Image 1 (cartoon, rainbow, N blue to C red):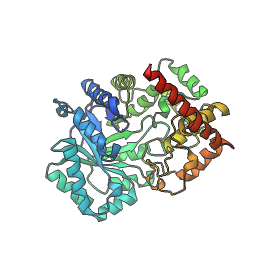
Image 2: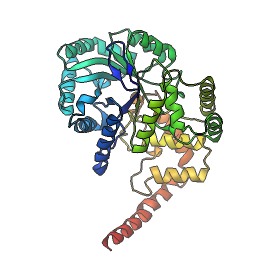
Image 3: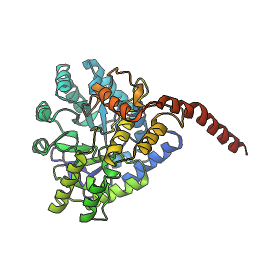
Image 4: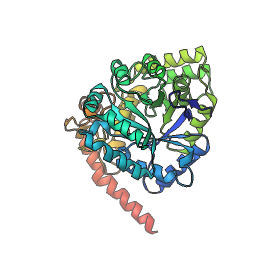
Length: 407
Protein backbone atom coordinates (compact mmCIF):
# COMPACT_ATOMS: atom_id res chain seq x y z
CA UNK A 1 0.00 0.00 0.00
CA UNK A 2 1.16 3.52 -0.76
CA UNK A 3 1.01 5.36 2.56
CA UNK A 4 -0.37 8.86 2.94
CA UNK A 5 1.44 11.48 5.01
CA UNK A 6 -0.27 13.74 7.56
CA UNK A 7 1.17 17.19 7.02
CA UNK A 8 0.58 18.21 10.63
CA UNK A 9 2.85 15.59 12.20
CA UNK A 10 4.64 13.87 9.32
CA UNK A 11 3.24 10.42 10.12
CA UNK A 12 3.05 7.99 7.21
CA UNK A 13 -0.29 6.17 7.46
CA UNK A 14 -1.62 3.24 5.44
CA UNK A 15 -4.67 4.24 3.35
CA UNK A 16 -6.55 1.30 4.90
CA UNK A 17 -6.92 1.15 8.66
CA UNK A 18 -8.35 -1.66 10.77
CA UNK A 19 -11.53 -0.61 12.58
CA UNK A 20 -11.70 -3.14 15.41
CA UNK A 21 -15.19 -2.37 16.73
CA UNK A 22 -16.95 -5.26 14.97
CA UNK A 23 -14.36 -7.94 15.77
CA UNK A 24 -15.80 -10.84 17.74
CA UNK A 25 -14.48 -11.58 21.23
CA UNK A 26 -16.52 -14.73 21.78
CA UNK A 27 -14.78 -18.04 22.48
CA UNK A 28 -12.86 -19.46 19.53
CA UNK A 29 -13.68 -16.36 17.45
CA UNK A 30 -11.38 -14.33 19.72
CA UNK A 31 -8.34 -16.12 18.33
CA UNK A 32 -9.52 -15.49 14.77
CA UNK A 33 -9.97 -11.77 15.50
CA UNK A 34 -6.43 -11.63 16.88
CA UNK A 35 -5.14 -13.46 13.80
CA UNK A 36 -6.95 -11.08 11.42
CA UNK A 37 -5.35 -8.07 13.06
CA UNK A 38 -1.88 -9.56 12.67
CA UNK A 39 -2.48 -10.59 9.06
CA UNK A 40 -3.57 -7.04 8.34
CA UNK A 41 -0.43 -5.62 9.91
CA UNK A 42 1.76 -8.12 8.04
CA UNK A 43 0.19 -6.85 4.80
CA UNK A 44 0.85 -3.17 5.37
CA UNK A 45 -1.94 -1.89 7.63
CA UNK A 46 -0.31 0.34 10.23
CA UNK A 47 -3.33 2.04 11.84
CA UNK A 48 -5.59 0.19 14.33
CA UNK A 49 -8.68 1.88 15.76
CA UNK A 50 -10.59 1.00 18.92
CA UNK A 51 -12.43 2.84 21.72
CA UNK A 52 -13.10 2.69 25.44
CA UNK A 53 -16.76 1.78 24.95
CA UNK A 54 -16.28 -0.99 22.38
CA UNK A 55 -17.34 -4.28 23.99
CA UNK A 56 -17.22 -2.60 27.41
CA UNK A 57 -13.46 -2.15 27.20
CA UNK A 58 -12.75 -5.69 26.06
CA UNK A 59 -11.95 -4.51 22.54
CA UNK A 60 -8.96 -2.60 23.89
CA UNK A 61 -7.86 -5.81 25.64
CA UNK A 62 -8.00 -7.64 22.30
CA UNK A 63 -5.81 -4.97 20.72
CA UNK A 64 -3.30 -5.26 23.56
CA UNK A 65 -3.14 -9.02 23.08
CA UNK A 66 -2.81 -8.82 19.29
CA UNK A 67 0.05 -6.32 19.51
CA UNK A 68 2.36 -8.49 21.60
CA UNK A 69 5.51 -10.05 20.12
CA UNK A 70 6.75 -6.84 18.51
CA UNK A 71 3.55 -5.87 16.68
CA UNK A 72 3.09 -2.70 18.75
CA UNK A 73 6.13 -1.14 17.11
CA UNK A 74 4.63 -1.69 13.64
CA UNK A 75 1.43 0.34 14.08
CA UNK A 76 -0.18 3.53 15.24
CA UNK A 77 -2.89 2.95 17.84
CA UNK A 78 -6.06 5.00 17.90
CA UNK A 79 -8.56 4.91 20.73
CA UNK A 80 -11.26 7.21 22.06
CA UNK A 81 -12.34 8.65 25.38
CA UNK A 82 -16.15 8.59 25.86
CA UNK A 83 -16.42 12.37 25.80
CA UNK A 84 -20.19 12.29 25.43
CA UNK A 85 -20.43 10.80 28.96
CA UNK A 86 -17.92 13.03 30.73
CA UNK A 87 -19.42 15.62 33.06
CA UNK A 88 -16.41 16.83 35.07
CA UNK A 89 -12.74 17.63 34.43
CA UNK A 90 -11.74 15.16 37.15
CA UNK A 91 -13.10 12.24 35.12
CA UNK A 92 -10.73 12.67 32.19
CA UNK A 93 -7.35 11.45 33.51
CA UNK A 94 -8.81 8.29 35.09
CA UNK A 95 -10.27 7.29 31.71
CA UNK A 96 -6.95 7.85 29.95
CA UNK A 97 -4.92 6.07 32.61
CA UNK A 98 -7.28 3.10 32.57
CA UNK A 99 -7.03 2.87 28.77
CA UNK A 100 -3.23 2.97 28.89
CA UNK A 101 -3.28 0.17 31.45
CA UNK A 102 -5.77 -1.91 29.45
CA UNK A 103 -3.78 -1.46 26.25
CA UNK A 104 -0.52 -2.17 28.08
CA UNK A 105 1.09 0.90 26.55
CA UNK A 106 3.03 3.94 27.74
CA UNK A 107 1.37 6.20 25.21
CA UNK A 108 -1.45 6.32 22.67
CA UNK A 109 -0.62 7.54 19.18
CA UNK A 110 -4.03 8.98 18.25
CA UNK A 111 -6.52 9.94 20.97
CA UNK A 112 -10.01 10.99 19.93
CA UNK A 113 -12.85 12.66 21.80
CA UNK A 114 -15.55 10.15 20.96
CA UNK A 115 -18.86 10.93 19.24
CA UNK A 116 -19.00 14.71 19.56
CA UNK A 117 -21.04 17.52 18.06
CA UNK A 118 -20.87 21.28 18.63
CA UNK A 119 -23.04 21.19 21.74
CA UNK A 120 -20.95 18.47 23.35
CA UNK A 121 -17.73 20.28 22.43
CA UNK A 122 -18.96 23.51 24.00
CA UNK A 123 -19.76 21.63 27.20
CA UNK A 124 -16.37 19.91 27.17
CA UNK A 125 -14.65 23.22 26.60
CA UNK A 126 -16.33 24.59 29.72
CA UNK A 127 -14.87 21.74 31.80
CA UNK A 128 -11.34 22.26 30.41
CA UNK A 129 -11.02 19.37 27.97
CA UNK A 130 -8.40 21.25 25.96
CA UNK A 131 -6.26 21.72 29.06
CA UNK A 132 -6.58 17.98 29.64
CA UNK A 133 -5.39 17.21 26.09
CA UNK A 134 -2.47 19.64 26.39
CA UNK A 135 -1.42 18.07 29.69
CA UNK A 136 -1.69 14.52 28.31
CA UNK A 137 0.50 15.52 25.37
CA UNK A 138 3.05 17.23 27.59
CA UNK A 139 3.26 14.16 29.81
CA UNK A 140 3.74 11.93 26.78
CA UNK A 141 0.58 9.90 27.36
CA UNK A 142 -0.84 10.79 23.95
CA UNK A 143 0.93 11.87 20.77
CA UNK A 144 -1.98 13.34 18.80
CA UNK A 145 -5.42 14.69 19.76
CA UNK A 146 -8.55 14.71 17.64
CA UNK A 147 -12.30 14.20 17.61
CA UNK A 148 -14.75 11.80 16.01
CA UNK A 149 -17.60 13.85 14.63
CA UNK A 150 -21.29 13.02 14.61
CA UNK A 151 -22.76 16.48 14.41
CA UNK A 152 -24.32 18.60 11.70
CA UNK A 153 -22.35 19.67 8.66
CA UNK A 154 -22.95 23.35 9.39
CA UNK A 155 -21.17 23.05 12.77
CA UNK A 156 -18.10 21.09 11.66
CA UNK A 157 -15.84 24.07 10.94
CA UNK A 158 -16.69 25.59 14.32
CA UNK A 159 -15.47 22.43 16.04
CA UNK A 160 -12.30 22.41 13.92
CA UNK A 161 -11.58 25.99 15.02
CA UNK A 162 -11.99 25.26 18.73
CA UNK A 163 -8.53 23.67 19.20
CA UNK A 164 -5.26 22.97 17.45
CA UNK A 165 -6.36 19.48 16.40
CA UNK A 166 -4.05 16.90 14.86
CA UNK A 167 -6.82 14.86 13.21
CA UNK A 168 -10.52 14.17 12.93
CA UNK A 169 -12.62 11.07 12.30
CA UNK A 170 -15.67 11.51 10.06
CA UNK A 171 -18.38 9.38 8.46
CA UNK A 172 -17.92 9.55 4.70
CA UNK A 173 -19.16 7.32 1.90
CA UNK A 174 -20.77 7.89 -1.47
CA UNK A 175 -24.25 7.40 -0.09
CA UNK A 176 -23.90 9.84 2.83
CA UNK A 177 -22.00 12.53 0.92
CA UNK A 178 -23.72 15.80 1.81
CA UNK A 179 -25.64 14.19 4.71
CA UNK A 180 -23.02 13.28 7.31
CA UNK A 181 -20.15 15.22 5.74
CA UNK A 182 -19.30 17.15 2.58
CA UNK A 183 -16.19 18.07 0.64
CA UNK A 184 -16.21 21.69 1.77
CA UNK A 185 -15.74 20.56 5.38
CA UNK A 186 -13.11 17.99 4.43
CA UNK A 187 -11.14 20.55 2.45
CA UNK A 188 -11.32 22.94 5.42
CA UNK A 189 -9.87 20.35 7.80
CA UNK A 190 -7.24 19.47 5.20
CA UNK A 191 -6.27 23.14 4.95
CA UNK A 192 -5.45 22.96 8.66
CA UNK A 193 -3.00 20.12 7.82
CA UNK A 194 -5.03 17.68 9.93
CA UNK A 195 -5.12 13.96 9.37
CA UNK A 196 -8.57 12.98 8.08
CA UNK A 197 -9.76 9.49 8.98
CA UNK A 198 -12.95 7.97 7.62
CA UNK A 199 -15.37 5.61 9.35
CA UNK A 200 -18.32 3.77 7.77
CA UNK A 201 -16.91 3.80 4.20
CA UNK A 202 -19.32 0.92 3.43
CA UNK A 203 -22.16 2.35 5.54
CA UNK A 204 -22.19 -0.54 7.96
CA UNK A 205 -21.78 -3.05 5.12
CA UNK A 206 -24.84 -1.89 3.16
CA UNK A 207 -22.71 -0.64 0.27
CA UNK A 208 -20.75 -3.91 0.13
CA UNK A 209 -23.75 -6.23 0.01
CA UNK A 210 -26.31 -7.01 -2.66
CA UNK A 211 -27.59 -3.95 -4.44
CA UNK A 212 -30.92 -3.32 -6.16
CA UNK A 213 -30.81 -4.92 -9.59
CA UNK A 214 -30.82 -1.57 -11.41
CA UNK A 215 -27.79 -0.44 -9.41
CA UNK A 216 -25.99 -3.72 -10.10
CA UNK A 217 -26.66 -3.25 -13.82
CA UNK A 218 -25.14 0.23 -13.75
CA UNK A 219 -21.99 -1.01 -12.06
CA UNK A 220 -21.64 -4.02 -14.38
CA UNK A 221 -21.91 -1.85 -17.49
CA UNK A 222 -18.82 0.09 -16.51
CA UNK A 223 -16.75 -2.67 -14.89
CA UNK A 224 -18.22 -6.17 -14.44
CA UNK A 225 -15.22 -7.29 -12.38
CA UNK A 226 -15.56 -4.70 -9.62
CA UNK A 227 -17.32 -5.78 -6.44
CA UNK A 228 -19.75 -3.47 -4.68
CA UNK A 229 -17.25 -3.08 -1.83
CA UNK A 230 -14.63 -2.04 -4.36
CA UNK A 231 -16.87 0.67 -5.81
CA UNK A 232 -17.53 2.07 -2.33
CA UNK A 233 -13.97 1.93 -0.97
CA UNK A 234 -12.51 3.23 -4.23
CA UNK A 235 -14.78 6.28 -4.07
CA UNK A 236 -13.44 7.26 -0.63
CA UNK A 237 -9.80 6.41 -1.35
CA UNK A 238 -9.99 8.44 -4.56
CA UNK A 239 -10.05 11.65 -2.48
CA UNK A 240 -6.46 12.89 -1.89
CA UNK A 241 -7.57 14.77 1.23
CA UNK A 242 -8.42 11.50 3.01
CA UNK A 243 -5.59 10.04 5.09
CA UNK A 244 -7.00 6.66 6.01
CA UNK A 245 -10.20 4.65 5.61
CA UNK A 246 -11.18 2.55 8.63
CA UNK A 247 -12.88 -0.69 7.70
CA UNK A 248 -14.46 -3.14 10.14
CA UNK A 249 -13.18 -6.35 8.57
CA UNK A 250 -14.42 -9.52 10.28
CA UNK A 251 -13.19 -12.33 8.04
CA UNK A 252 -10.17 -13.13 5.89
CA UNK A 253 -12.00 -12.60 2.58
CA UNK A 254 -13.00 -9.05 3.53
CA UNK A 255 -9.48 -8.33 4.73
CA UNK A 256 -7.81 -9.59 1.56
CA UNK A 257 -10.22 -7.76 -0.72
CA UNK A 258 -9.83 -4.45 1.12
CA UNK A 259 -6.05 -4.71 1.16
CA UNK A 260 -6.09 -5.36 -2.60
CA UNK A 261 -8.32 -2.34 -3.19
CA UNK A 262 -6.17 -0.09 -1.01
CA UNK A 263 -3.07 -1.16 -2.95
CA UNK A 264 -4.68 -0.49 -6.32
CA UNK A 265 -6.58 2.76 -5.76
CA UNK A 266 -4.53 5.94 -5.81
CA UNK A 267 -5.83 9.49 -5.21
CA UNK A 268 -7.71 10.90 -8.23
CA UNK A 269 -7.50 7.55 -10.04
CA UNK A 270 -11.22 7.03 -10.75
CA UNK A 271 -12.41 8.02 -14.22
CA UNK A 272 -15.19 10.54 -14.89
CA UNK A 273 -17.35 7.65 -16.06
CA UNK A 274 -16.81 5.75 -12.81
CA UNK A 275 -17.63 8.81 -10.70
CA UNK A 276 -20.80 9.49 -12.69
CA UNK A 277 -21.83 5.84 -12.29
CA UNK A 278 -21.44 5.98 -8.51
CA UNK A 279 -23.44 9.21 -8.35
CA UNK A 280 -26.23 7.67 -10.43
CA UNK A 281 -26.24 4.52 -8.26
CA UNK A 282 -26.50 6.68 -5.15
CA UNK A 283 -29.49 8.54 -6.50
CA UNK A 284 -31.27 5.28 -7.33
CA UNK A 285 -30.62 3.88 -3.86
CA UNK A 286 -31.86 7.06 -2.20
CA UNK A 287 -35.29 6.35 -3.62
CA UNK A 288 -35.46 2.98 -1.83
CA UNK A 289 -33.63 3.28 1.51
CA UNK A 290 -36.25 4.03 4.15
CA UNK A 291 -34.18 4.47 7.33
CA UNK A 292 -30.73 6.08 7.16
CA UNK A 293 -29.08 3.81 9.75
CA UNK A 294 -25.30 3.18 9.64
CA UNK A 295 -25.60 0.10 11.93
CA UNK A 296 -22.85 1.55 14.15
CA UNK A 297 -24.49 0.07 17.26
CA UNK A 298 -24.06 3.14 19.47
CA UNK A 299 -27.77 2.91 20.35
CA UNK A 300 -27.19 -0.49 21.90
CA UNK A 301 -27.84 -2.21 24.21
CA UNK A 302 -31.54 -1.45 24.32
CA UNK A 303 -33.04 -1.74 27.85
CA UNK A 304 -35.91 -3.79 26.40
CA UNK A 305 -33.65 -6.02 24.32
CA UNK A 306 -34.58 -4.65 20.88
CA UNK A 307 -31.85 -5.23 18.27
CA UNK A 308 -32.26 -1.78 16.78
CA UNK A 309 -29.66 -1.98 13.96
CA UNK A 310 -30.96 -5.38 12.82
CA UNK A 311 -34.57 -4.16 12.83
CA UNK A 312 -33.62 -1.27 10.57
CA UNK A 313 -31.39 -3.45 8.41
CA UNK A 314 -34.18 -5.94 7.63
CA UNK A 315 -36.65 -3.12 7.04
CA UNK A 316 -34.30 -1.40 4.59
CA UNK A 317 -33.47 -4.67 2.83
CA UNK A 318 -37.10 -5.38 2.10
CA UNK A 319 -37.50 -2.15 0.16
CA UNK A 320 -34.02 -1.96 -1.34
CA UNK A 321 -34.23 -5.44 -2.82
CA UNK A 322 -38.01 -5.69 -3.28
CA UNK A 323 -38.32 -8.76 -1.08
CA UNK A 324 -41.64 -10.57 -1.09
CA UNK A 325 -43.74 -10.07 2.05
CA UNK A 326 -43.58 -13.72 3.09
CA UNK A 327 -39.80 -13.94 2.68
CA UNK A 328 -39.16 -10.67 4.49
CA UNK A 329 -41.53 -11.48 7.36
CA UNK A 330 -40.13 -14.99 7.76
CA UNK A 331 -36.63 -13.56 7.94
CA UNK A 332 -37.76 -11.04 10.55
CA UNK A 333 -39.53 -13.73 12.59
CA UNK A 334 -36.56 -16.09 12.63
CA UNK A 335 -33.84 -13.51 13.14
CA UNK A 336 -35.55 -11.14 15.57
CA UNK A 337 -38.69 -12.85 16.84
CA UNK A 338 -36.83 -15.46 18.83
CA UNK A 339 -38.60 -18.37 17.17
CA UNK A 340 -35.33 -20.21 16.62
CA UNK A 341 -33.27 -19.26 19.65
CA UNK A 342 -35.79 -18.02 22.22
CA UNK A 343 -34.23 -14.54 22.24
CA UNK A 344 -36.81 -12.06 20.96
CA UNK A 345 -35.31 -8.75 19.81
CA UNK A 346 -38.16 -7.41 17.66
CA UNK A 347 -39.24 -3.79 17.30
CA UNK A 348 -42.51 -4.37 19.15
CA UNK A 349 -40.60 -4.65 22.43
CA UNK A 350 -39.71 -0.93 22.32
CA UNK A 351 -41.10 0.93 25.35
CA UNK A 352 -40.46 4.41 23.91
CA UNK A 353 -37.97 5.19 26.70
CA UNK A 354 -35.97 7.34 24.21
CA UNK A 355 -32.57 6.44 25.74
CA UNK A 356 -31.36 5.47 22.28
CA UNK A 357 -32.25 8.80 20.67
CA UNK A 358 -29.43 10.81 22.24
CA UNK A 359 -26.91 8.13 21.27
CA UNK A 360 -27.81 7.89 17.58
CA UNK A 361 -25.02 9.15 15.35
CA UNK A 362 -27.52 9.68 12.51
CA UNK A 363 -29.89 11.73 14.71
CA UNK A 364 -32.79 9.37 14.03
CA UNK A 365 -35.97 9.34 16.11
CA UNK A 366 -35.42 5.64 16.78
CA UNK A 367 -38.69 4.87 18.63
CA UNK A 368 -40.71 6.36 15.77
CA UNK A 369 -38.72 4.42 13.21
CA UNK A 370 -39.24 1.22 15.20
CA UNK A 371 -42.99 1.80 14.99
CA UNK A 372 -42.64 1.60 11.19
CA UNK A 373 -40.72 -1.66 11.49
CA UNK A 374 -43.32 -3.12 13.82
CA UNK A 375 -46.15 -2.08 11.51
CA UNK A 376 -44.41 -3.66 8.52
CA UNK A 377 -43.43 -7.00 10.03
CA UNK A 378 -45.42 -7.67 13.17
CA UNK A 379 -48.70 -8.61 11.52
CA UNK A 380 -51.77 -9.86 13.45
CA UNK A 381 -50.88 -13.16 15.05
CA UNK A 382 -47.14 -12.41 15.11
CA UNK A 383 -46.82 -13.07 18.84
CA UNK A 384 -48.82 -16.31 18.58
CA UNK A 385 -46.67 -17.66 15.75
CA UNK A 386 -43.55 -16.48 17.54
CA UNK A 387 -44.70 -18.24 20.70
CA UNK A 388 -45.31 -21.48 18.83
CA UNK A 389 -41.78 -21.34 17.52
CA UNK A 390 -40.28 -20.40 20.87
CA UNK A 391 -42.21 -22.82 23.08
CA UNK A 392 -42.83 -25.72 20.69
CA UNK A 393 -40.41 -25.77 17.74
CA UNK A 394 -37.35 -24.62 19.68
CA UNK A 395 -37.66 -27.19 22.54
CA UNK A 396 -38.21 -30.02 20.04
CA UNK A 397 -35.19 -28.91 17.98
CA UNK A 398 -33.06 -28.74 21.11
CA UNK A 399 -34.20 -32.21 22.15
CA UNK A 400 -33.25 -33.63 18.76
CA UNK A 401 -29.88 -31.88 18.94
CA UNK A 402 -29.21 -33.35 22.39
CA UNK A 403 -30.13 -36.84 21.20
CA UNK A 404 -27.77 -36.56 18.24
CA UNK A 405 -24.91 -35.45 20.50
CA UNK A 406 -25.40 -38.59 22.63
CA UNK A 407 -25.15 -40.93 19.68
